Image 1 (spheres, rainbow, N blue to C red):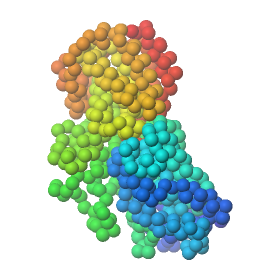
Image 2 (cartoon, one colour; image 1 turned 180 degrees about the vertical axis):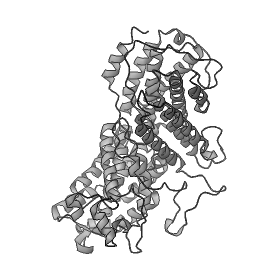
Image 3 (cartoon, rainbow, N blue to C red; image 1 turned 120 degrees about the vertical axis):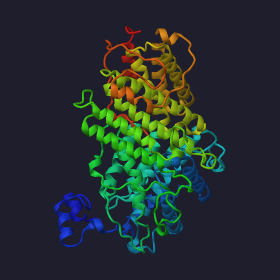
Image 4 (cartoon, one colour; image 1 turned 90 degrees about the horizontal axis):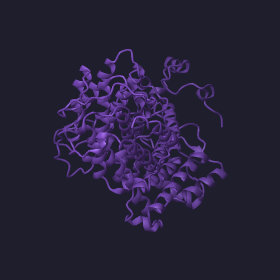
Amino acid sequence: MEQPFQNQIGYARPGGGNSLSELYELMGENPEHQAPNPTHVMPLHPPTLRLFLDICARLPQEAVTRELIETFFSEANWYFAVLEKYYFEKLYASWSALSTHLMSNGQPGGLPHGGLPPDLLHFPALMFQVLAVALQFAPLDLPCLQSLGVDGFAARDRLSGEFSERGVAICRIIETGGPTLTTVQSDLMRALWLKNSSRGREAWHVLGAAIRMAQDLGIHKQAKIFQKPQSLLEDTLKSAVVRRVQTHMAFALGWPRTINSSDCTIVPPLDRDIPADPSTTVPMALFPHEPPSSFTPHLFQYTVCQQIHEAMSLGAHNQHPENYTLVETLHHRILSLLSALPPVHRPVNPDRSWDLTHVHIPKQRQQIATAAHSFLMALHRPHSKIRVASRNAAVEAALCTLDAQEILCDLMAARYYSIYALSVYTVEAAIFLSVTILEYPPSDSVLADQIQRTLEKAIRRLELAQDRVSLAKSGLHILKLCHSRMQPMPHFQQSVHRITVQQPSQILDGISSGEPQIGTVPSQYSFPESSIMPEFGSGGVDNAVMFDDITVSNFDIESWVQQMNEMNDLV
């Protein structure tokens, strides 16, 4: 197939700031102001078509598919926010109108040039990924599971994997002239499935591919989109995907950034849910009497991601920054973001008037708290060995992260344990706490007891998840090893009443003044100033905010075991 000129030479898509874009502007044909043509069709060669149809034929029957789709949007998408149901249903309706003819005739007859629009061509791949993730969170008493032959968690997870692989197979056999919004969504869903399957490294690579496709489509650029009434798929789908892709762009945790925030010119959307019919609704901010937005946590996470990019660009994640006030400034910003949240989503003293009718809001508060505290922990971690204020702030943030995770797990059913963030946040914060306390044993018994009890709760959570989540099992091994190293320490042999973990809004004074103070617990916590323990890698600020997003598990058990063994002299 002949490639377009801009593909042959390798020019960026519209708005790329290259000679071709300037030529388009000069000629009055700026492609940045042209809507993509969703009715363009892609022909399939007969062997490819047969293979494509064979895989599509393995989609479950309509009733089962619908039940799993509803399960995904009710049980999973509130947390991950990868898809908007309105736009997904439009694609689904278009696919359903074509699929009967495809399956009965074995060819896309009646379509222009004997092909399918690219978005619809890739929609079965997206459907398989949606069904795969839905199965990860489907309760075993869901009626459709019986017709699928699922009689337990093992069978459910096995079928989930088969669905996801079928989606990947469709993407492999289809060659198109370029990426589509549907392929971006399909890859995001595949990365989500991999992450929930404790395959973080693979998820990172798939996420990178999704981001590159989104960039190729120009999703990261702000532009006016002129819709055509005859479009099969409304171009407003683009703005919905932008919301999700942007959040993921900053989630290359522990890896090089896939995209720089300066490349993104898109304006974040209003903090409100997409209406039932976006084409006839004028977007406006929420009125006080309206139900709260389910998108608030995701906008908050996106804003935190922007702070990560700035921290890395300014060098605040380096162990010896030129200006430590950068750390203080970023800390201030996170606290300001928390204070500026709508009262219903505020983690501290929230408005609970909507909790009974919007059951996910209490969980979303803990999502927000986890995102904020994890960022603060990672922000101060590189400086915790040389600055007591940062050490105390990082310890407090780690405790708050684990506290939020405990509450979140209490609010969720056991089927949610496979959510990647429920394990990785716990493991990350608990390991940081363990290493810090082993290196700098606290002189205060109250703090020691608080840490011990928090770590024991983290271990219990991982024990509940270890049978189904391999990351939880690996993290549990590390934490038990850390915990055993702490037992000989004097303060960990005492039994003291638990003190409630304080919120991080009260540690800023200690950071600004340099005083070794955590929260408002009525005693000063002092740590030894140095240690002979080998220094652990800081991980950098990019290890913050492991939100739903898609990250990679970098925990090398053998490495941690070796480092734990080197601590014998300390304890």
